Image (tube, rainbow, N blue to C red):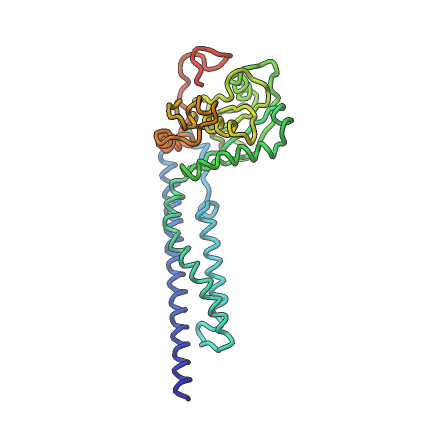
Length: 324
């Protein structure tokens, strides 16, 4: 009888040693990957600063590691590991009694997902290095402001551009929406865009609430002639007619943002950059060629000033060199 009890006690002690070793290994793995993530983030910031022209240095702004998505994930994983240690410490090094066996199961239940999350940190670090953050200055005219609520447009625009994160690791960060009193006598959407640019003193790198803006998105509810949107990349600004929560409103927005990534019109019948496909509600995504160009140009919006304005008139009511 005594031998059986001793054997049973030995079995429990073996479980304690295995659990202790697993928690220690998981903690070491977490700390190593956390260090890798911090170093990788700092190296990435230093590299991007080095790439950027000297005259654009005043506009630089980078988040700290724990302000990024990977940093937030790391924080919660570390909190879970800390909680595991707190739960396990009362019995982990002093043996275990029958009444405490339930605590072991709780600790193991916490430990296993934490170990999996710790191992998954490496690909997340890689994704964080490739993510581009574009700060957006949003503007609504009085007609757009009155036809729908502010929150309606905020939800429409900000939800629509989320497609870029899944496909291109691009995150658009909005820093509030601003009111603009448009000229009711103007009937061309490109004229309205330049009015918004002038009245809002827009330029690439405009500082709003301490942040440097890279793109201005304007929504107008004023009736316009012809085009539903206009997006000259050399202004880093675009305007769309208010069509909240409609398919054409979504595809038009994707089309105009595509021009900011230096995309021209496309012949693919399902591509956002095909104007006819948008008119017929056939556009479903960027084609493979346009997607590759977005990946090539996505950092230019943040780190380099706009391209020079080409010759000719790109606004003013239907001049010969209209972009769209």
